[in-house]
Image (cartoon, rainbow, N blue to C red; front, side, top):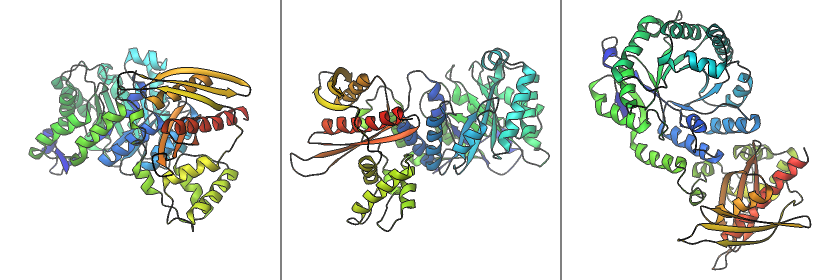
Length: 496
């Protein structure tokens, strides 16, 4: 089902349907929100859900820590097939080439140049004079245009910017190659009627939005509305009614227009007008529930470790014994690993031993192969003993004792469950916290005393490390797998 929405003002200009593009910036805004830290795996899951929902654009954070962020962008780019994937660059353009290398594999890549245009925020954020900001914006947009035809200029705090200056920087951005221009009401103090006048005034003052550039192509006018006065949806509808064709939303409450609320408003009024919005409403409610589960910081992450394992990724990989080493290397890279040629050879050898006995090898089995065959290193940390206390009336605690050479170190930690507590205790011993990318558990024998095999994937400095553990209980195998992966992380750090 496709949502039908419309803009009364534009019906007089054209009898054809106008597409309203929905740009979801949940991941980008979550990165700036306090108390909402999404893991690498959760970001991949969120990207898949938004892609299946067929929002027009998925916006993600840019590059701050080179290796880790490049891996994140590359990984998301490989799984987003239906949507445009948008990534911001710095105002000075210093990271454009690096961002593009990570983004280039996306089916529909977009580069964004976002600049604070109001006097107060311009001075605070950019520490540049107004004229210099215009020059920097134009240079950076032109440099982005050398990589892709889809470049967005975002004027932050536009509603509090001097009108003449705002029009000047927008015209400079369009002349430099911006194909989408988004104006933001970050303060959230306008009422819908005021915002409608703001948008209509811009379109009157900048004819290119209606008449097109010299080549005849009209840049897309986008909007972002704060929900400070609880009117973000009304503001967005008012902006659409005056000619905006792209709306920024979040699919989790982050202080601006909410995706499901906007879609609902458009669906109720759509048939009476003439604008299309391509969002899959048949799966909207279910998808929003899944996104709530991923984003809600109050939800125990441990209870969802298993469900965060992507069934779609598993179904994408089905390797056969006839596949060559290059095909195995591609599949390993798809899982997020960056292995040396020597480790790829070891993985391929182990794969062949298993694949000859099976019809095919899927992603989970390949993960286990990588964990057992790749980057085998001397153990810096060894598990000595562990004690777990858990129940439905107490918070889980874990006491872990590990050996580092001849030295024994023991720490106690609490967590949202026994495994979470155990991992926290290990992190406390090591003195570092690692990002848990994945957790998988499967039985390798049958019966009440069945052996359980766990595979844990950790992310450190942009690389994925996997560990494997086997025990008769879930906690024991999880702890051993975590320590196995941890030893690989520490070995590489010590030998760089």
